[in-house]
Image (cartoon, rainbow, N blue to C red; front, side, top):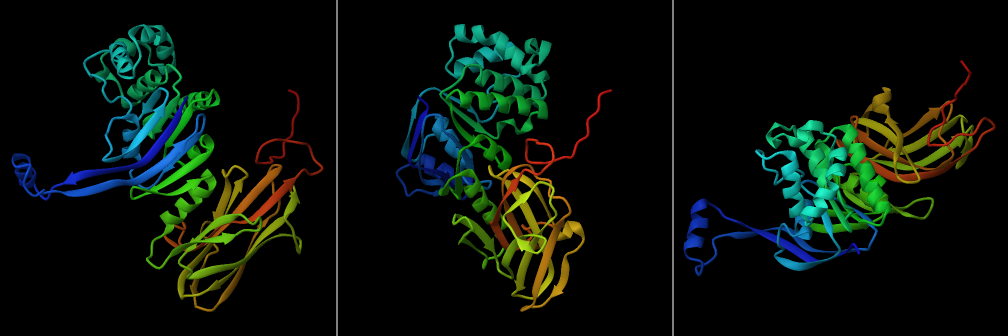
Amino acid sequence: MGRLNVNTISKAYKRYPSQWARLREWLDPQATPRHEAHWVLRGVSFEVAPGEAVGIIGNNGAGKSTLLKIITGATQPTQGTVTVDGRIAALLELGMGFHPDFTGRQNVFMAGQLLGFSIAEIAGQMTAIEDFAEIGDYIDQPVRTYSSGMQVRLAFSVATAIRPDLLIVDEALSVGDLYFQHKSFERIRQFHGQGTTLLFVSHSMGAIKSLCNRAILLDQGVPIRDGAPDDVLDYYNAIIARQETDQHIRQVESETRRSVIRSGNQAAVIEAVDLLLGEQSVRAVQIGEAVRFRVDCVIQEDLDELTVGFLIRDRLGNDVFGTNTAYLGSSQRGLKAGERRRLEFAFPAFNLGVGNYSITFALHGGHAHVNANYDWWNQALVLQVVPGSDFQATGVSYLPTLSHWV
């Protein structure tokens, strides 16, 4: 249960040049069509296995929400079919359908029936819904007196009152308060751990990495990437950074022989990177050792400014730490084509926790690579941090700690 098959889904909306054209077509449907088809999805196909967690990402207008509405049956596709095995719970627009003049309790019964629950099932879950929503006496007040956050709380509680086979979430929790967001994501994780299939749309890269074991990237209604979240998000990041027509995205082989993403307009290019312990090139260091990142680059066009940055990620692809020369006050200006530069980032104590990490390096203008991306080299280095001689700890950071009884 919970299997989803999306087979060559396409969706087009009619676009009319004016209201009169719409009226003329309606009055004379046999005449030449007066609209043009605006395709928001084209030939989307993928399959989600039971228990899998898949993130859907893409820019605004990429077709993510339309795809989810087709999967849930709220919108019909122009072409293609969708097959779902099991019961769906969809969190698309939380609170949509609540009647403002009815109480929260009355709306729970109406919304629950729209989700396919019987009145007996809703009544049996009412106490749990109230407890999870935590809106107190407002449950018996008209919904028009609710804040948007309270509506989100109640709607999420109803939609997830009974564990579904397939849970679809479309950035619906972004308007809730932080406490309820954490609480809701924990329930989503619990459902997934119990076997619920998850289809998740979010602009939060951290949420995609945390919740999903697969990601699909949509661009202008077409799926262009499907794979591990870390790889797909890196490709998405490269697309976001693409500002100039001559900039391109290319595949490079990393030290681990994995295919990784490298992007930029090549106005400046990273020639080599290294991790140094003293003067020795290493790929494994002990906690707390003094190390340096070395970056060699060549300037290929005259540049007003050159910023060099790095980003450390853990083995799951979560961002651990990053900075750049703009923030450190050491970017260079007035560079000429043909010049070469070497920069080193020094760490007096490399206090990362035990584990494997990757380092991404970037050359760009300004404080962020999305302004003028010269060269973004994902996973340019892979390193291992091993235990030192001090006390043991867990996690991705190492914070020297003293303890005493009071």
